[in-house]
Length: 554
Image (cartoon, rainbow, N blue to C red; front, side, top):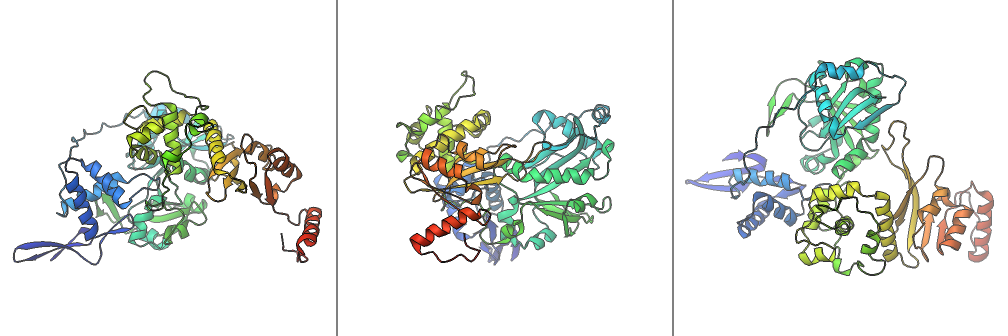
């Protein structure tokens, strides 16, 4: 008997080879892949002999509910899983239909003299801005790494983000983030991860794979300032780019070259050292160069969320995802979804349009209500619709829009107009007399960018469904109090009960809700409004025989 990867063994007896599991089975998406799962995969392959490996992987993901944090099926990693199982003789897959990819061409780099011209005159009084690069800046970003980083330029694999640090128009720093390391004993021990938790939640950790302060920008504290500005917006940028949040950042510092001072100054924590291994392809080789492991929580509850059994950062599973009955949705009636979406302008040119604007937006809205949190998940949800369901949502073709279509259309759409339209539609059909609506204001973490202050929003959320039916931005010279009237503008809330904290306990807000919107309200009254508190307590004592307050009641 000899061991096989991921807990499999092969036993031989009288020339007969038998496959069986050891006590440590393969864990995938937090689920043990045992004999039952292998049998189910074999049955899927048997029923669909003409399907490609990608199609089989998607069917397996549907069968077991394997989704990525954004809500889309994890088809690529499932393909890798099927390939590894097939290589060990546990499955028989159809022949690969992929043509051998061409060797990628080396990226075109700019000359060093052309790069230095940018940093000759730096305005040190300018505001430091750390922002993601745009596509036209990718060549310059790669060239800076190739010329000035001791590791040179290497393409980033998988989910990643690239940043420029700017003082005025001058580039002073380069930052790159990618997926977290697959194995790191010091990190896993600090978090409290076992193998299952690491495989399930590694996507919520991001790795600082490159950090470079350019030679002409050597100023005291600049490196820690760049890191701080980047970390304040990293979680928001990652969720916008890849459809899921990240809560912990990691990096590895070669102590033979650096002391990690800028990371310590930015409140990173050193949790130990690596064992001196580097990844090469699908395996690891020992090089003996141990590196310090630094971690930085992007949320106060990051470690607890990563280690606990049930975490709020986990994506919804297939069993708890909302089932949306398209046939019962108010689409074509007066005030239906099509009518409100028709108010959103189509930003595309007429030539070459294959899918109507209303159909694309309707599918995106319904997919989001069904739990989709990324563009890939929206496209997969639309692809699973029947022909009749697509027609009901306004499609003119049998095929649904692909991910690139959703990406282009939604990127050019007036977000404010779409938010008003869909919020009003949901409020009209979800708000009944006595329905509770909570209003609250929040500052978006990481939305501070250079001279622009952090964005502050006031939102209206249904108590029962947890759906945001309206939200508005609080102006720099305004506050949450003056944002309530524009928040409910154009929203029918007659008969609803509006709840809020003591911030909204204002005469003008109460008058607007009762007289203008015909709604009721429940607001808190604290000691900072002593006259109103006394009046409320006296009224309650008369009607409900309310006991005297002890100074802590609201």
